[in-house]
Image (cartoon, rainbow, N blue to C red; front, side):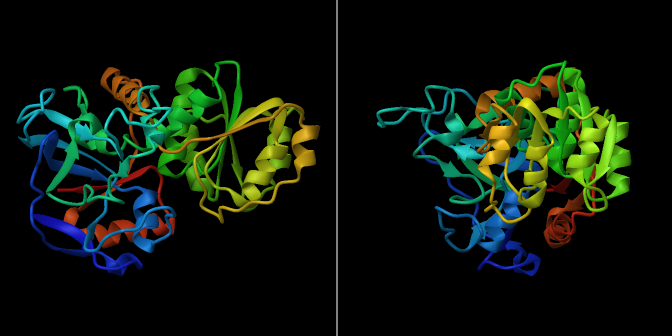
Length: 347
């Protein structure tokens, strides 16, 4: 099959387009013919070798999200058949384990203690075919296109999970950072759908303009303005109820200062360095602040996002599409951060 592979960690030039053997399915496994691939920042981290706790075996195929049809099923597969429209789940788990606490059975398959990561510890979706087990596969509603699905599995499900963890409510005023990115632009739509007042932040005025088209009420350019001051000015000095945060560093610190009393902050990673020094007194002064993190998303959140897409409640924003053979160009755009929404590869 044709695939984008890496033989070593490195920059975008480490991506090579060529031929590799098509995966063979075993018991309980499903082979998917990939139609569309979503480009994710996690792909870049794996490519660079910046993901801790698990190593990559070379040659390696990247790709944590995509959509396609079932091409082959292995022995024991009962829930899927050839021709089914499906999406793979990033966290490849078994549904049950021998641990004293089985997170999968609790609905937290995203933190299963024995899972693999699609596109990290096993080959991913930057290929004509990808293999997963049947537990790590979801049916794709007929109303949802492969393109919309491939741009939603990580970004929209992550944004939904972030909001769910802090109990996002219609009466909330929410600060959403990095609204030009896949997760940020998804969070704007989800907060707007919920009925929140939205303060959007980004590093360019053009991204803020786009966010306002999607429902943001106020825009703050964190490169030219002080985020805390602008947020407090926009809220009459009170601060926001919720922050959905994906940048880290100084923006995270400013976001904490922008929270109202009893505020909630939900993080799903960082663009800036992951280690951030926080003065604990800020949390004490801003009484009863809640901080939470999202490590990918459980299948139930992905199912919910697929339902929203099927009903037309959400509409993924496409920044650019490239053929699979031009994965380097897609990664160069991702690294530039000069885009709004999602980037895809078409197989």
